[in-house]
Amino acid sequence: MNIKNTIEYIKKYTTLSISIVAVIFILMFLKQCNTNSSLKNEIANIEIENKRLTNNHNASLDSVETYKVKENTWRSKKKGYELSVDELKKEYSELLGDFKIEKNKPPITIIQTVAEIKESITDINVNVNDSTISFEDDTTYTGGNSRYISSTIPYHLEYNKIKVGDSVNISTKVITGKAKVDFKQEITLTTGLFKNLETGEIEILVDTEYPNLVIKDIQGAKIMENEESRKVARGFRKTWGLGVSFGYGATASTKDGRFVVGPTVNIGLTYQPKILQWGK
Image (tube, rainbow, N blue to C red; front, side):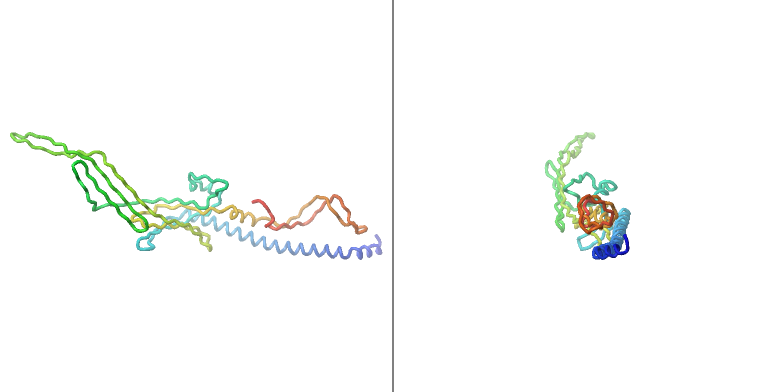
């Protein structure tokens, strides 16, 4: 190709050349912007994940703290976990217990509470008749809590004559049967699971107005939903890539500027927004 032909070629394809250069420049600019944005997202996702794992570790070391919030209300507090469904099924399977994870019914929260009641019941009136000894106590507390206990014990008297010299002494012995006891309690526990938006920590609170009820242990977790669990993974996706593509299409001829239809082989830069990337 001589100089004249070269000049004519440049004139003929000046607009196309400028367009190609402009497109390449825009793509490179967008790639750089997206790289910076992706890097920021990756760093943010890593920080969030590290914070979650640290919070879960701290929760495993925490113990129950109990304190009074109102005159008749006691609150027990302990840190909880934030888990994925896979973590719940594997590392924290004891927390899942006998629950089964169904495909269309994923768990949202799991809470285990161990409570102990220590009570001494005094000043109960006892009734005695010819054949039974019985008592009954019915107590109502605030907050919908109550306790009811009653018992009936059958008995009979056994007399024994003991001759002492010229006299006869009679001794009496009470023979009891098996007792029947009815016992009923209504205990209200208000349980809440809260997340600190600044630290990401999960906190479990249990309130009760039942006297002498002690919360010995609390284990619980907020289970991340599928969409929430995938956010971190999506944060690591790449939107730009270099690759080879094969297809069938139209290309411009470098000889006469005409479009030629046929098989194509392309090597280039591709851009795909994360929102258009499917799957996990």
